Length: 388
Image (cartoon, rainbow, N blue to C red; front, side):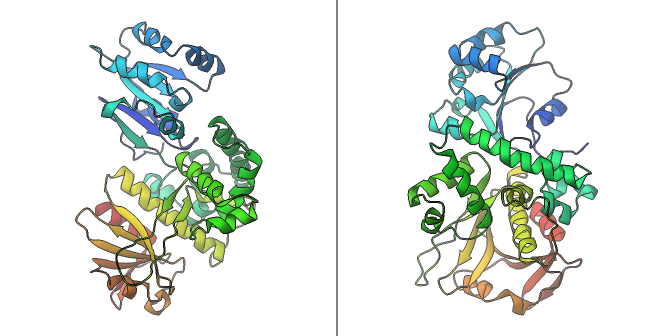
């Protein structure tokens, strides 16, 4: 059994969001195994139709629950946002049970201006496996090749893992977008997806992508917003300030899983080779996603950016902690990296304020320092971040 890092409170209502197949249901079953639960699954068409026609029926369900039932689990709650009004009333009643509200997207709740329970419920996000959770079962090349979605990562047959990846992209992503009624032209959106995967981790030129997928600038921006709202990826924004130097204004976008990136591009059956451009981009994407997961799970309250000038000086990741300390991070998939390989990004960034630390993340086996830069194997870096 893999011990998940996410902390699920036992005496508080909470939303648990995450992409499908990240293990939300399994985690709830594991953490609340010894507790009596009422499970309402809105993926079941009969249950969905019943509560969609009359959301108030959930009040009857809860009031008629068996004695000793302390938890009410509502899976895919975003499918019927109106349920949250009824739940809000229930949680204010005497001896109310605790509500566990799960879903793979908060988009519908935001769009419908749904009742988010007035701050009475925590919001927790569940990600694919992290290196910390997998421990001795984590292997970098395997994670970059197939991603770390639980079922896919733990599949011992590479061909079966590739089949699961293809199914996830062909079925789940399409179903999720259709279910959210997020786009009018699904075909155009599916043309956009490979372009988003191909430009993963690069600054987004919305107009260029719009021309390629026969769409327009605003539609492409909306497509990216859909991916973020459905937790399939997130933006990394540039660090900007009031300086004379012209800094980038375009965000980058990182999909949430390296295996999903490869499957969208049709590479799920191809071998990933260290030292290639693909390996390097996937390594960077994985490291940045791990930073976001550590930030969320360990409640670090870190701000993350990238830095780039019009003259090409760049830093892959800038982390600012709650005390305003600024850490500049370069990510290189090589085993051996020298300071001369890093360009002028650190120096350019330091001109805008003191850097607490300059770090280059590598695939090497030992840490070392040179010319004011700490070269850290990825594991050392992530462990340092957890302890920060």
